[in-house]
Amino acid sequence: MLQEARRATVFAIANQKGGVGKTTTAVNLAASVAVAERDTLLIDCDPQSNASSGVGVAPRTVDRSLYDALIARATLDQIVCSTPIDRLKVLPATQDLVAAELELVDEDDRATRLRKVLGEASSQFDYMFIDCPPSLGLLTVNALVAADAVIVPMQCEYYALEGLTYLMATIERVRSTLNPGLRVEGILLTMYDPRNNLARQVAAEVKGHFRVFDSVIPRNVRLSEAPSHGKPALLYDAQAKGAQGYLSLAHELLGDGA
Image 1 (cartoon, one colour):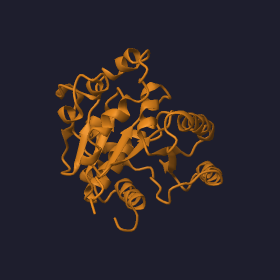
Image 2 (tube, one colour; image 1 turned 180 degrees about the vertical axis):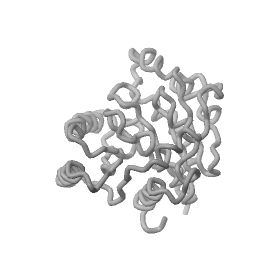
Image 3 (cartoon, helix red, strand yellow; image 1 turned 180 degrees about the horizontal axis):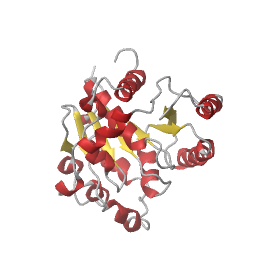
Image 4 (cartoon, helix red, strand yellow; image 1 turned 135 degrees about the vertical axis):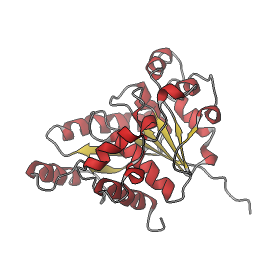
């Protein structure tokens, strides 16, 4: 019997609200999955390029970026960069990605460009994680079309549920048109402080409507410091509560066999 070719599972890390931990989640979850001996690709789909710099790849040091792949000026293999973690690669972003939204707006395949790009290398990886920008624009739509599932980082605060409603409506539109298999893998509670009454109330409300990961990411200074050193938290301080939170999430995502 012929063995089925490997195909990466693709997760979009999405929430149009800024400051909820999308990039922190994309970087540290990808790193945690990679140290669990899975070949992993981190895709920086945000022109701010924070996911790239968060794994030690400064935008000013790269000749090609995701932008070049989206406009078919380079292949994924020509762009992917190594990171300090052996089994983690990154598809970096630069500010050029801002132009991609404008240049692709009139193209018939504008929403499926990223899916095509990632499909070229799907057999090289076990998992791919897409860091989405804080908006529901064309780049985020491309990520949702390319993904198998969405992970939604959410800070437990007053406006969180309203933002979640808009995101779910966008996911449903993508599911009904371009990606019927898209699913919400779960809501990830970030910057969580169990001593805060509002945080506990919002968490309870979310759990009443959505699947919420058992793993919770606490407020953690070391987690906030790691990006300034160009490292995922587990390379900066593996014992920090934030790093341990993402290692726990990786094991939850991968299953008991991780």
